[in-house]
Every structure is written in C-alpha cells, then in structure tokens.
Length: 198
Image (cartoon, rainbow, N blue to C red; front, side):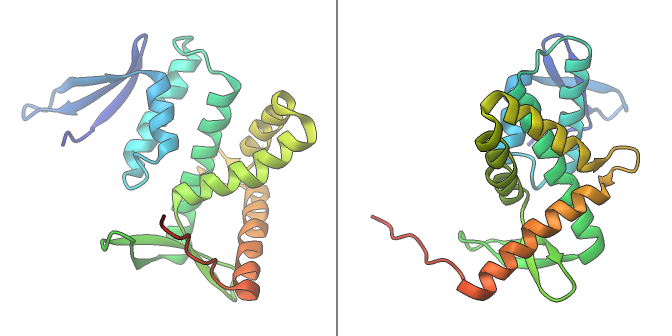
C-alpha cells in the first residue's frame, strides 16, 4: 500500500506522490479526474479523510486550471462529498466517536451525531446517500434534472463555511433537521427489518 504524501493537479489527472527517504517527492501514479471523482463518491477515501481532502483539492485545482471539464454531475458529486466529509469531521470533533462492529466482524470508530437528547452514528457514505436522496432528489423532483442539479450545487455550497473549513450555520440547520428526522423515525418505528438473502 502506497502512502500518499501529496496530490497535485496535472493536465493528465491527479498526480499521487510520496516522499522518499531523502525527503524528495516522487511521482507514484496518475488518477484521471473522472476516476478521482468516482473514487471519492464510492467511499474509497472515507477511512482516510486527509487523502480524500487532498484528492478533492487536486480535482478542484484541475478544474480551475481548465484541465478537467466539470459536468454538473461531477460538480454536485464533489460538493456532496465535501459537505459529508466536513460534517463527519465536525461531528467527530464535537461529539467524539464510538466503536461499532461492522457486518464483516471488524470494528470501526464512527462519528456520532447528537441533538442533545438522542444520537446516531454517522458514516460518510450514508451521509452522501442521505443528501443525494433528500436534497438532490427533492431539487430534481421540483425543478427537473438540469435546474435541480444546479440548485443542489448552490445549496451544498451554502452548507460549507469555506473560510473556517466547517459546516455553515445554514448547513448545520439542514443536517440537524435531516438527522433529527432519522432519529424520530427510529424512535417511532425502530430499526428497519434486515433484507432477506435469496
């Protein structure tokens, strides 16, 4: 496994570099911009947020340099990833983590969302899924795919305080409503039944 020390935008994609024993950065691989966005969205860097942030930043830099032509879908995916990553970081800092035994038997440290009365564990992937379903889905249903996607991008941008690197007050309000709804649903209906394996 290669340890990333640096990700940099290039005309060909995101250059992944490590530092050698002499302290010099060496190029290890190139990830196309398309692949980098897909890997972020698929959760490849969810347990390595520093790498995810570096790759996210390199993709954004590549777009700013004109090396990557962002589609609306790339843009909304990048914003969704960033909001989820920053929210998880904020929740870890504010509420800590708890150990959860995963379906495969491994144990993970997972962030906690708390409204002061109740709490739930939050994962980056489930945050992205919840935002795609509840925010983007609502925007697309109301405005259609093109305009709805553009509205979702604007909405996500408002959810981040870029200067402070945290979720904005608006973003906190939106995500609190979303998670409080999930908590209320769990309290009223309990955990959903496990799907049957066929």
